[in-house]
Length: 83
Image (cartoon, rainbow, N blue to C red; front, side):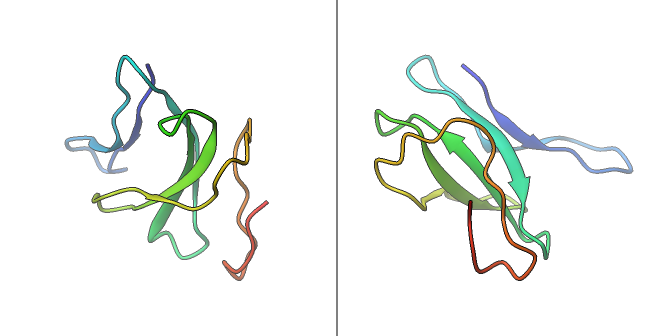
């Protein structure tokens, strides 16, 4: 089990963006260029795929399907491409 959190630089309570469970793991977080979105890898669908969630918290959305990605997603400077 692994989770993705955002912690304010000036201190304060961490925000759980992608809490892990006993059945799946999350990892490899990467901020979008504008800082509004966090992309991460999760196996919550049975294989590792990329998901995104607002940096302020909210529901995660699946970005890829059946990719089997391992590692950390990388977002292009213009936010238009994911590798």
